Image 1 (cartoon, rainbow, N blue to C red):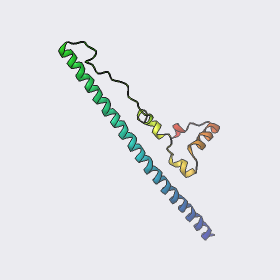
Image 2: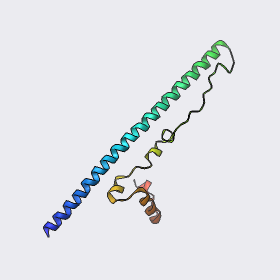
Image 3: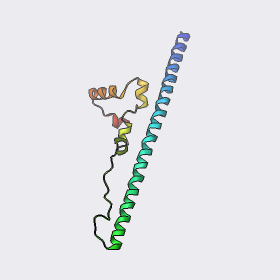
Image 4: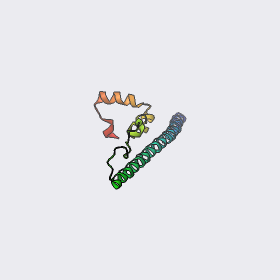
Length: 125
Protein backbone atom coordinates (compact mmCIF):
# COMPACT_ATOMS: atom_id res chain seq x y z
CA UNK A 1 0.00 0.00 0.00
CA UNK A 2 2.75 2.40 0.98
CA UNK A 3 4.80 1.56 -2.12
CA UNK A 4 1.76 2.34 -4.31
CA UNK A 5 1.30 5.69 -2.58
CA UNK A 6 5.02 6.38 -2.93
CA UNK A 7 4.87 5.58 -6.66
CA UNK A 8 1.84 7.87 -7.08
CA UNK A 9 3.62 10.70 -5.28
CA UNK A 10 6.75 10.17 -7.35
CA UNK A 11 4.64 10.27 -10.52
CA UNK A 12 3.00 13.51 -9.38
CA UNK A 13 6.40 14.98 -8.54
CA UNK A 14 7.78 13.99 -11.96
CA UNK A 15 4.75 15.53 -13.70
CA UNK A 16 5.10 18.73 -11.67
CA UNK A 17 8.83 18.86 -12.47
CA UNK A 18 8.18 18.47 -16.20
CA UNK A 19 5.44 21.10 -16.13
CA UNK A 20 7.73 23.48 -14.26
CA UNK A 21 10.46 22.97 -16.87
CA UNK A 22 7.99 23.64 -19.69
CA UNK A 23 6.65 26.73 -17.92
CA UNK A 24 10.17 28.02 -17.31
CA UNK A 25 11.11 27.62 -20.98
CA UNK A 26 7.86 29.25 -22.12
CA UNK A 27 8.29 32.10 -19.62
CA UNK A 28 11.87 32.72 -20.79
CA UNK A 29 10.74 32.84 -24.42
CA UNK A 30 7.87 35.20 -23.58
CA UNK A 31 10.23 37.39 -21.57
CA UNK A 32 12.60 37.69 -24.54
CA UNK A 33 9.65 38.42 -26.81
CA UNK A 34 8.37 41.14 -24.48
CA UNK A 35 11.86 42.64 -24.23
CA UNK A 36 11.88 42.97 -28.02
CA UNK A 37 8.45 44.62 -27.93
CA UNK A 38 9.58 47.08 -25.26
CA UNK A 39 12.70 47.87 -27.30
CA UNK A 40 10.53 48.63 -30.35
CA UNK A 41 8.24 50.80 -28.24
CA UNK A 42 11.21 52.73 -26.85
CA UNK A 43 12.62 53.27 -30.35
CA UNK A 44 9.23 54.50 -31.53
CA UNK A 45 8.91 56.90 -28.57
CA UNK A 46 12.42 58.29 -29.15
CA UNK A 47 11.62 58.74 -32.85
CA UNK A 48 8.45 60.66 -31.93
CA UNK A 49 10.42 62.89 -29.54
CA UNK A 50 13.03 63.55 -32.24
CA UNK A 51 10.36 64.44 -34.78
CA UNK A 52 8.63 66.76 -32.29
CA UNK A 53 11.92 68.52 -31.52
CA UNK A 54 12.61 68.98 -35.24
CA UNK A 55 9.15 70.42 -35.77
CA UNK A 56 9.52 72.67 -32.72
CA UNK A 57 12.88 73.94 -34.03
CA UNK A 58 11.36 74.62 -37.45
CA UNK A 59 8.48 76.50 -35.81
CA UNK A 60 10.93 78.62 -33.76
CA UNK A 61 12.95 79.43 -36.89
CA UNK A 62 9.77 80.44 -38.69
CA UNK A 63 8.73 82.73 -35.85
CA UNK A 64 12.23 84.21 -35.55
CA UNK A 65 12.38 85.11 -39.25
CA UNK A 66 8.79 86.29 -39.30
CA UNK A 67 8.14 84.08 -42.29
CA UNK A 68 4.81 82.31 -42.47
CA UNK A 69 5.80 80.09 -45.34
CA UNK A 70 4.53 76.55 -45.11
CA UNK A 71 7.82 75.38 -46.62
CA UNK A 72 9.71 76.23 -43.45
CA UNK A 73 7.63 73.88 -41.32
CA UNK A 74 8.37 70.23 -41.68
CA UNK A 75 5.24 68.23 -42.25
CA UNK A 76 5.12 65.35 -39.77
CA UNK A 77 3.63 62.38 -41.50
CA UNK A 78 1.98 59.68 -39.43
CA UNK A 79 4.34 56.76 -38.99
CA UNK A 80 3.30 53.17 -39.50
CA UNK A 81 2.96 51.64 -36.07
CA UNK A 82 2.84 47.89 -35.63
CA UNK A 83 0.24 46.41 -33.31
CA UNK A 84 2.73 45.35 -30.63
CA UNK A 85 3.96 48.93 -30.38
CA UNK A 86 0.42 50.29 -30.16
CA UNK A 87 -0.76 47.90 -27.47
CA UNK A 88 1.24 46.13 -24.81
CA UNK A 89 -1.78 43.90 -24.12
CA UNK A 90 -1.83 42.60 -27.69
CA UNK A 91 1.63 41.16 -27.13
CA UNK A 92 0.30 39.24 -24.12
CA UNK A 93 -2.62 37.61 -25.92
CA UNK A 94 -0.98 34.19 -26.09
CA UNK A 95 0.34 34.02 -22.53
CA UNK A 96 -0.74 31.05 -20.45
CA UNK A 97 -1.65 31.64 -16.84
CA UNK A 98 0.32 29.07 -14.78
CA UNK A 99 -2.84 27.39 -13.48
CA UNK A 100 -3.89 26.81 -17.11
CA UNK A 101 -0.77 24.77 -17.75
CA UNK A 102 -1.01 22.94 -14.44
CA UNK A 103 -4.60 21.96 -15.17
CA UNK A 104 -3.65 21.04 -18.73
CA UNK A 105 -5.97 23.64 -20.24
CA UNK A 106 -5.35 26.17 -22.95
CA UNK A 107 -6.85 29.67 -22.83
CA UNK A 108 -9.42 28.54 -25.43
CA UNK A 109 -10.54 25.70 -23.17
CA UNK A 110 -10.92 28.18 -20.33
CA UNK A 111 -12.89 30.60 -22.50
CA UNK A 112 -15.42 27.91 -23.44
CA UNK A 113 -15.79 26.71 -19.84
CA UNK A 114 -16.06 30.34 -18.73
CA UNK A 115 -19.07 30.79 -21.01
CA UNK A 116 -20.70 27.60 -19.74
CA UNK A 117 -20.29 28.49 -16.08
CA UNK A 118 -20.82 32.21 -16.57
CA UNK A 119 -17.69 33.48 -14.80
CA UNK A 120 -15.29 36.19 -15.83
CA UNK A 121 -11.70 34.91 -15.65
CA UNK A 122 -10.30 38.43 -15.80
CA UNK A 123 -11.95 39.22 -12.46
CA UNK A 124 -10.69 36.03 -10.80
CA UNK A 125 -7.04 36.58 -11.68
